[in-house]
Amino acid sequence: MRNKPIFKIVAVLAVLLFLFFIVFSALQRKPNSKQKSSNQTAKKRIKAPKFSSDSAYAYIQKQVDFGPRNPNSASAEACGNWLESKLEGFGANIITQEDNVTAYDGTVLRMKNIIAEFQPEKKKRIMLYAHWDTRPFADKDTVRINEPIDGANDGGSGVGVLLEISRMLSKNPTDYGVDIILFDSEDYGRPTYASGSNYKDWCLGSQYWANKPHKKNYNAKYGILLDMVGGENAAFPREGTSLEYASNVVDKIWKSANSLGYGGLFERAKTNPTTDDHLFVNAAGIPSAAIVEFHVHQMGGYGKFHHTHQDNMENISKETLQAVGDVVMDVIYNE
Image (cartoon, rainbow, N blue to C red; front, side):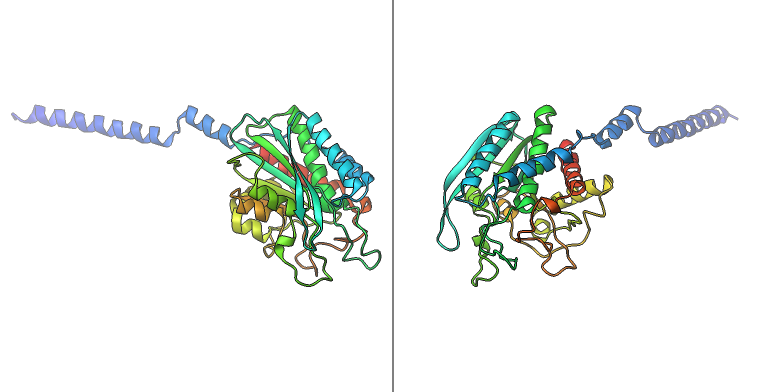
C-alpha cells in the first residue's frame, strides 16, 4: 500500500491535464476579438463619392462644341487650353508636354500631353488616362471620308469621365496620389484604305511620354486607360494586351464591376491584344489595363459608328458613363 499516494497524485495530474487540453482547444477555436474586428475592417470596402454621369456628359458635349480636335487644328488648340484650365481649376498641379511628332505620312503634328497631378506630394500613385484628340478622317464612313470626326465617344468620352473623376478628387482625396493624363495624337494612325499599317503609327502622344515621362523615374502602382467608354449598348470585354501585361489590374477592375452590378457590361469574354495607349504605358513599366468598347461577336468589334461621322453626341449614353465612372471610382478609392 505504499504506492497509493502516488496513484492519487498521478490521477489528479491527469485530470488537470485533461482540463487544460479542453480550455486550450476552446481558445484555439475562438478567434481573438481584436483580430476578428481588424480583419472585418480590412475587408470592408469604402463607398466612393457619387459619380455624376450628367456632369461627365456635359464635359463631353463641351469638347464636341469646340469641333473636331484633330492635331494642328484651331479647335484642338482651344480645347487643349480649356482642358488644362479645367483641371487646374480642380486643384491639380498641371504639367504639359508640348512638342512636334511625326505622323505616318510625314505630317508634323503639334502634340500636347496634359498631366494633372492630385496630391503630388504622395509617392504612392495611380495613373488614369485617355486620349483627347480625335480622328482626322472618317475612313470607315462612306461619305466625307477625308474630313475629321466629332469623336464624342472615341476621345471625348474617356476625357469626360476623367474630368468628372478629377472634380471628385478635388473634394475627396484618395489614399494614393492620382495622376490624370490626357494623351494627344493617339488617333492619327494610317487609314484603313491605306497599306503598310504599323502599330507605331498610333498613340504618338503616349509613345512620346513613355520615352520622356513628365517626371524623372516616374512610377505608379498601376494605370487604367479609358477609351470609347460612353457608347450606347457598349460592351467591355477583357482586352488582350491588358491581360498580357496587367492581369491583376484587369481582375481588380472586373471584380469591382461585378460587385457593383455591372457584370453584364464588363464581360468575361476576352479579346485579342490591341494597340492603344496602354501598350506603350505598359512598355514603360506601369502595369495598365484598358476599359475599351469592343464587341467580340461583331465584325470589326469597335461598333458601327467607330471612325465615322456618326461618332457624335447622339450615340453617347449616360448609363454607360455612369457604369464606367462608378467602377473606376470604386477601384481608386479602395486602393
